Image (cartoon, rainbow, N blue to C red):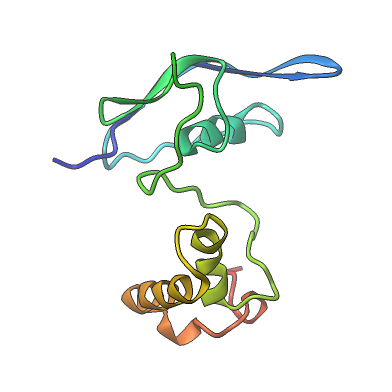
Length: 149
């Protein structure tokens, strides 16, 4: 069975600040079946990034629920999803450290999370780059790569 069935049920997110409450997402429901591609479009500040951040586990939700393959990842009793390899975010703007090589950037997450020691993280990064056919750029810096533009 292919995974990736995502269901958002009446998801809401309200931020609380010194200025008061800001409703970022209100009553959003969406179902994405495995293999489907959905695009979330809207003006700046309408809650697109907040919603995707909740699916990825970057931020919690205030109401509703998010299920992945029938399992609750965020909702009642679990206001914030645990980040997982089953959900990936590709940021619009580059988030690479320009002073680190591609391999060093790839190793950064496991290093700072304490999941791997520095040497092991960098070895794993090189292996992943090789597997993806990108071993030849491991020692290059982000500014030396094409952004596709």
